[in-house]
Amino acid sequence: MRSTFLPFSTPTIEEAEINEVVDSLKSGWITTGPKVKRFEEAFRAYVGAPYAIPLSSATAGLHLTLLALGIKEGDEIITTPMTFASTVSMIILCGGTPVLADIEPGTLNIDVELIRAKITPRTRAIIPVHFAGQSCDMDPLFALAREFGLTVIEDAAHAAGTEYKGRRIGSLESISIFSFHPNKNITTGEGGMVCTADETLAEEISLLKFHGMSREAWKRFAASGSPNYDILMPGFKYNMMDIQAAIGIHQLPKLDGFIDRRRDIAEYYNRELAGVEELALPQYAPYVQRHAWHLYTPLVRIEKLSIDRDRFMEELKKHNIGSGLHYKAIHHHAWYRQHLNLPDSALPNASYASERILSLPLFPKMSDDDARDVVEAVKTVLAVNRR
Ligand SMILES: *Cc1c(COP(=O)(O)O)cnc(C)c1O
Image (cartoon, rainbow, N blue to C red; front, top):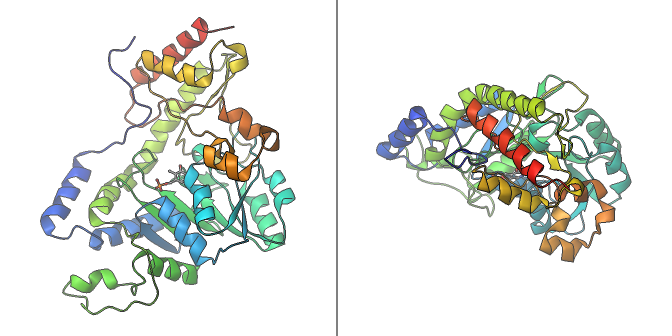
């Protein structure tokens, strides 16, 4: 057994990121400023989006996008139950109604076929989540959205660097929202980015993110700016700081290398765990894509074991292997059980995955030995707890 604990994820922060943050701190310009502008432009160019708006989180991005689209009481938004809470809670906090469509059992992405049946005259938008960094099937999803006049908002929190049929997520005909939380493919500590081709929407989100101040208001304390500002509408305080962007500026050029390393480890897991009957391994979608491998999420076939998934995770921990839970399905959480009142039979694939899924360690800094330790621990725990 390994002697040190292996967490399920940890960011790769090197000298360049540290020096850039120190530079910000010493420069006297800590909050939104030239480094945010540099990071915004670099990220916008990387994904190939006409406009990018840096924010304090992806949750802020979801919130402002829904508000800028005018989502209000009575509006229905179709999304997946296999996501982080904020995808759905932002719909509710804007007064909208989340409508959950079940997932495909192999990719755990929203099943586009099942979206159609959920569309009503009140439906306004669809929020697909590119689960674990694997793109949803966007062509049929866009076709459906066009047929019914719906807006597509991609929750791209897992999908920095993901491609769909040769096109990078962030450059498609939709709005994409990225997260730079420390567990994500690149980090700014906390942070997010909304990417869009819609200039009006970009302008609206830019206003809402910072007190409703005119766009270049961050310059108001600089020599090139004017200390006078105007409030064009009531707004939030969702801006990204320079000390956050300082980290992102040095993370972005490493993203492709990070993804290569993530894919190597994921494919090693795929090979080493292929014959293990008690696991259902993550599946590749049939279309051409670049999977960003944000997560590696096998399902534990608990029917074949004497322990449940939570116990399985505890047993891994006893072998010094951390794991994550992405996700307990939305409709299994206390508040949603009470307010959505969806029985397991309403979303059978998500309910099935919710009780069996876990995230094995996957991050670029992991060594081959670390990956081997994970496989060994998984096999041992399964062997000892077979029915
Ligand atoms: C991380 C995550 C979010 C929220 O991102 P923050 O930047 O932490 O607000 C939203 N949706 C999904 C699918 C996520 O994984």
